[in-house]
Length: 278
Ligand SMILES: NC(=O)c1ccc[n+]([C@@H]2O[C@H](COP(=O)([O-])OP(=O)(O)OC[C@H]3O[C@@H](n4cnc5c(N)ncnc54)[C@H](OP(=O)(O)O)[C@@H]3O)[C@@H](O)[C@H]2O)c1
Image (cartoon, rainbow, N blue to C red; front, side, top):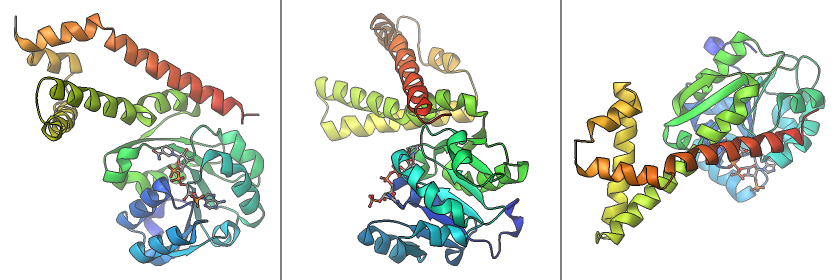
């Protein structure tokens, strides 16, 4: 299907109603799809009932049934389940149905090998802040995905945060920065809070100060557009407290640690992907 200015009457199947599945479901409803256009498949009956109750969407357990009537199929199951889900839906997909997957690591070739020739596929690397509308997603098109399909996916994801187009070869790097990145930010928050406790602050106050500081700094960086070095220099007065702190970060190799962490994540992403390539 093409760009969704005309998505009245179109159907979407969200396969997998976990954390990401629910985030996509909420994004669809927030971006103008109505609940009767969306169906979610889920293996757990309790979870299925929960989603049906809260979002008033149709839910079921059969991926093939949902995919057969869908114009857009969003795959949100764990990577190790994606192969069997594709085998279920491949025989019933209608020509033109676009398949969008958020599964980490699986290359586009993995989907294109299992789906009917010419099926448009779009790979998405989202991150967890999408749950609160502050995500950063990257999307990469398969060989049959058109500009219209990318615009469609951008619209669906628009309420989850920022969306960037990349070539598939860059998704390992994206995974290392924005996919795994929330864990680095939580690590920083935790370390700052721990330091606050060490310095005598109550844990709750230390944690709230750390969270608000990271959130506020990110907002300032995003709004000002200034280079992070400029922003850092602005809070580092000569001979002051901040410059003393930053010297310790450098002395302890924190910057090098972050670079090494991202490199390890990219390597691991490549390694996991190569298991499925071909
Ligand atoms: N969470 C993230 O931050 C994040 C970020 C980037 C990418 N992703 C990708 O998003 C995908 C989903 O991750 P998640 O964190 O949302 O996992 P999750 O919470 O475990 O969700 C997966 C859901 O799929 C259901 N499921 C399992 N087998 C199924 C089947 N055959 N048909 C339909 N539904 C099935 C599971 O139900 P049961 O629990 O009953 O088995 C579960 O509710 C993964 O591929 C992951 O790589 C997630």
